[in-house]
Image 1 (tube, rainbow, N blue to C red):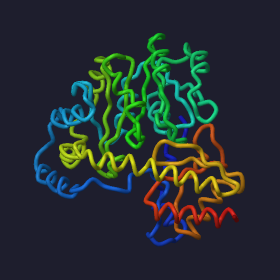
Image 2 (tube, rainbow, N blue to C red):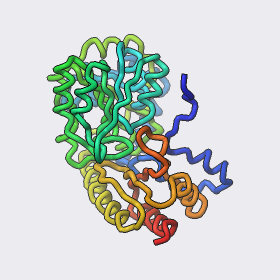
Image 3 (tube, helix red, strand yellow):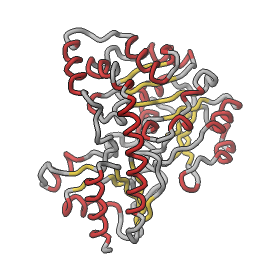
Length: 356
């Protein structure tokens, strides 16, 4: 079995601080989290503390109903988890067949499959990280399940996957879609497949609460499907009480904060455009168009390790070395979209290091 210890994520900030003996005042662009929080979130968390003297509802009925109201679908189609990561690992436990993964993408899909002894077929996105339906159709008999990230991590682009879903339904294949970053997309309703859950039983969607709402430490994600076999099998192997009272309680409020949701979407649409414009004015780098809160950059000068080290040591900025994504190499880095003054600091630092 391949090495599964080195997880290869962003946010390796503690290890970097120790390695380079830096202070803890580091600006972290390696982790893609909303820098803004919902109003009154501290009150909601403290309210959850009052509920922590008892076990959460083992079936999470109120939590699932709050999510179902937010998404306008049947709460019985929802299984909650301790972050999207638990959902990824749970769904891998109930798969019976061969898994295809569209690369480059999040490494935990492969890791969860390997742990569960699932055979993997590596497929690759086409030019500009677009889904290549012809390539998938050519390989259709080589897999039973397809894992795709939308918007894709690390490239950030969102795509209309309906034709792909229809193709897989025609061939009786399951499509697993990670929509963890979908809420950041301004016109996300056009791209999210949630509206097709009732119609397509070959569809399984993974979503997360904590990235868009800026609360990664709270740990809350959920899976969605109308496939009764998948839902039943996941509940049958799910560990009890993996979602805590804090996460359960905040969902009574944050999904109803329409003003926060709208402002967040508008902010990121404007800030993404600003960052892409500024980054593209720096020589020797190429920034890929993105629809979510991070940007993939290709270096035409230096390599990812050099740039990461220089930014960290000289500027106190941590970025994501994207060279360990399948299909990418040492010329790729990924940066988050943060607050304007923080983004300006990154852009200035890159200009200086790139020598322009």
